[in-house]
Image 1: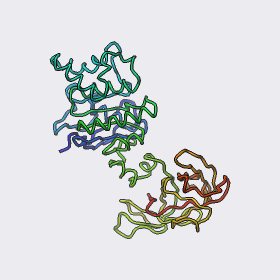
Image 2: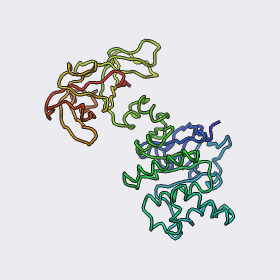
Image 3: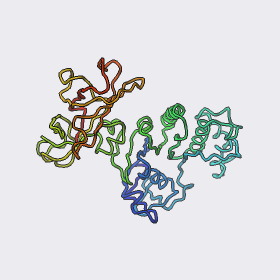
Image 4: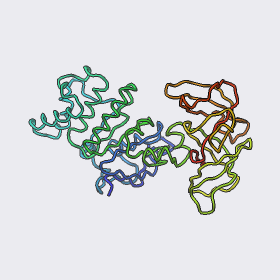
Length: 374
């Protein structure tokens, strides 16, 4: 049995034309790190607030260990919550902030001191117990908030974009800290973010939200390597898309394999096709290729790939560990089905052809197994 079960959960806000959470079915396993990922307004934070008890569902059931918890107040759910704004009490010391959940639970003072010291040691703040929040850096404040969420040994720890206020370097350090704590403590964690890199770094599984629904729920690797639809492919990582026509599809009854698609200018390429739908020949489809899978050459003969799309180089940008190429596909913009007038390629310095100049014609190559058709 899953630790947490959402069964046909809806959340409607008065005056809103659509549901913030729309028929959500989600099972969360004990001990896993699950990230709710999606753009603003997609329903991920509302889902977390429903789980924490700060919002009530309009319909549906939420169960913890098989028992319904929709009517339970937040303090009876045994869940620690870390907010985006930290929500530390400014008049309390670090130790007093961490001790607060234990105090309201009437834990003995001698045991409180022991548990607070253990929690602060876990987040490497045992030497800052007497400081006030305004005497701490942003990263230290976030560690205090995390220690406060862990100190009473909750069944789950819920985190609502807790690292968004930190700079890039500190955010990456805190990601590793959260990974370490999850690994050492084994506590179930549910994490909300709109940052795809954060989701990839932290998660056992990721639920990609869009308009109140989960588009796909899978491991970070499976989401990246086998997205279920164009939304997931475009939201998780960089992605190039091109409207095409299916020239040759799957055999009858097959759900995956290789097919051939035709661009608006008549170029044909081979690609993977993964679908639960029947795609007829001459159907309108979308071809998707990640920038890191593209190879660049001045002509097709120089490419070690079976596929080639002709293009014109628009820009060449050095980004440290790779070059970012911007290219306009041949005939792009002349057909309404062509949704990607510009494609991007990530090329390692050693693989960049010599003498490339802006304005020259080139070929973008890729293997069939590195592309998808939706």
